[in-house]
Image (cartoon, rainbow, N blue to C red):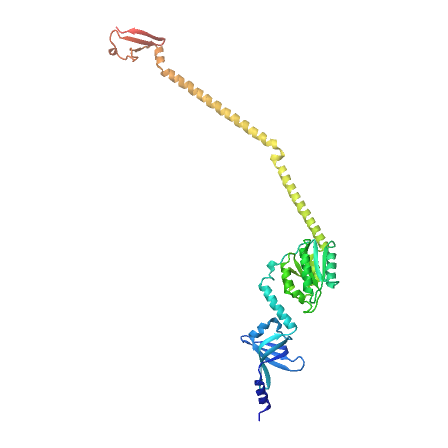
Amino acid sequence: MRTISRALGDWISRLGRVWVEGQVTEISRRPGMNTVFLTLRDPVADVSLRVTCPRAVCDAVGPGLVDGARVVVWGKPSFHPGRGTLALAVVEIRPLGAGALLARLERLKATLAAEGLFAASRKRRLPFLPTAVGLITGRASAAERDVIENARRRWPAVRIELREVAVQGPLAVSQILDALSDLDADRAVEVIVIARGGGSLEDLLPFSDEALLRAVVAARTPVVSAIGHEQDTPLLDFVADVRASTPTDAAKRVVPDVSEQSALVEALRSRARRVLAHRLDLERRRLADLRARPVLAAPLREIDRREQTVGALRSRSLRCLTHAVDVAERDLVHAAARMRALSPAATLERGYALIQNADGAVIRSPAEIEAGDPLTVRVAGGTFAARAE
């Protein structure tokens, strides 16, 4: 006869793998172990089941596997007679309800991020003051009122190109795509706001649709996402050029505040006047300094001084030249006197004569001539011919 626990263990061991639905109430991931321990609670009865599964199985589920998530697991049950506990070795986990939606959105998010569609480098800056603002929102919605009223309060002249569409349900994506294409084709529209109030995860699913996300990326016009409240984060927030926390925040980001801009312009004008006045004062001081310099205060004074200098130099050069001429003249007189004293003519004037033969050579001895030779006699008064005897 078998005991109840042994009989129950034998019966459970003969079971194959089974599907079990439950709510995750505890997740234990121990460092260094490849096994994850879960606790599933029956959503109807007060029953819990201990579950073990490989870490890879849990990682494949993604962020949808959290405390409180509804899941369906597939695994083989086992019964431990000593402790009287039932456990389940899981080989597959599938999220249900919101968990499945979150898992699907996370997979799409990972795909788009890998393609670079969330990169900050591809996001465009909003224009400072757009000519027209395109608004895609629900018909007569609070989001429409918040955007329009706040935008016109900040800049009364702003022009809003409104496109009312379904913001939830099966027709939402197609209508939003048509409105986005229409506004993007309008060259006057410089920024497009896609706005909607808060809602559940299922209500906001159209704003995580892949077709809409890729259309926003391909749009020529910058797109602002203003979906839900601060805690709502549809995938449109990641691909849009600017993410606004609320529709009111979108209006503040799209158009400037006229009073703030007026104050800024006045402050800039005052600053420009101060800078210009300072520059004029500086230039006036520089001009006064230049005019105070002697060369500009009395420009002829320098010319007079130069004229005096030139006159002094002329007088000095004239004196130097006159002195040099006088010295040269005296030297010339002395040289002429010496030349006259040393000249043969002076000797002739004292009664001496100079005798030359026919060749012009001076006769210094009677032996140099013979009788009958023609001679030339030079005296102080001139020359005359003679003949030797």
